[in-house]
Length: 119
Image 1 (tube, rainbow, N blue to C red):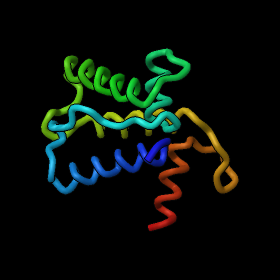
Image 2: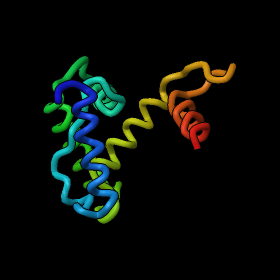
Image 3: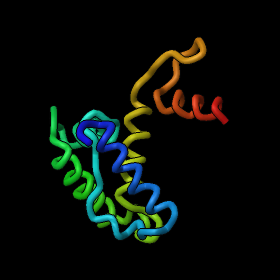
Image 4: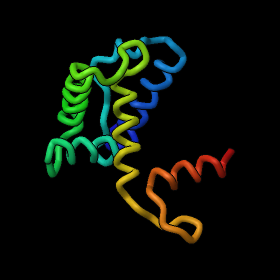
């Protein structure tokens, strides 16, 4: 599968394998990043890029993870490239604003409110 849906599907598969403990979080040495996703947008913002391929975004995610780990962030037993990708997604959503139920909220708050509404 190509495009964001295909890449996000692969990313979700990795997330599930880690969640059900079929693979260790530390075993992830590569992780898919979609071009048109919040994690990819965050990486481009952090690295001051206007665009990047999925392979470049994946390499940037690995680079950022290694830099953060070298500075004492993230726990090797529990955190992984997936954790960083999720954090980047949340950070990007927190930067955007939208109208939800008659008020202005961050994109992250909107996603949380939507999830709460479904449960």
